Image (cartoon, rainbow, N blue to C red; front, side, top):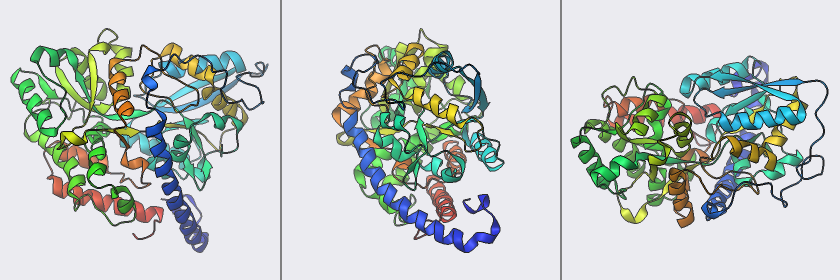
Length: 473
């Protein structure tokens, strides 16, 4: 994929450059593991912090002042922002309105699909030079395949980047240059559940996979959908597999490094294969809604909010979508980490925030930098929180959580407070197979055995690693 963006008469140069980049990527990943580990240390106790008021000790802005910005220019500038159509926009719009008021910089939103279809839209627009001024997209391994050095503006030395926590910078960096700002909050992968139904059925939060299955059996017996599937939006099919990474790391601490170095496989590592087995088992036991292939993400959240479905394997930040559409139901929703096979090793898999990147082809780069500067300032955080409760901790220095966060977010914070968290695999390794959503749909539909799916995904990963030029593949 790297080569597809470059002219064909530079093959030797590209291979040398690629190997050099690879070595740097490996070094970067070592640094990433250390920095992401900081995430675990950064957030404990944040549930007890106060509201996101401007911090007198906040980092300075680009003009050397603290949260002070120039007067709005006379001429209005309009930036375009490409973003997934399932992203909650309330907080983002709050920041946009504040930016327009202060800088006379308006923001025009361009929506794209989610999942693989959305990935292709982003890659196509980058390849054709048609990217919006600002691109809202994943951090971590998926960011790496966008060829950031070619497509995005280097923000490494922008003064406002001192506001951003280092663990996040590591996930939006390539060859020691930083290209993105955090677009939202830290996310956690696990199980959203309807607390009201849990109380009605006398259920307790499960600490093991068997306990979760026992709860599902009781829910099924009560005539409700135990596990909501929403494979119409295929990206949602991955959550059971990806959220299981805390359990993988608990059993095989070196899995991420060995996987990156082509020394460990999903198919031959029982702890990693277990994620595919769990996905398959949920379907085979009849716990899912019958129309899971036609159900969308939005429809799934409706089922969860109304209690017709009781569990939804999902990112914790989805509670913001529930608040937007079912505000009177959001306090009925709780969250727990994906259980492993032992209650002694119960913990949470964590995602760093998505990023916002400035297109190199933008004709408004300076305005986009000013936009980004405000977004990561204390004023920006205050504008965000004024319109939307955060779904998790921010990756901005000095930003704290309000006291009235959602109950599901309070559930998440308990894992941070206890130190029982681990980064998702895609933030510990730069390699993620692009066909994982489709593979998970097949496993979660009961159409493909876990062992076969794991072998197929290993081949998908191998193909991606070779395209990116990683050594040992």
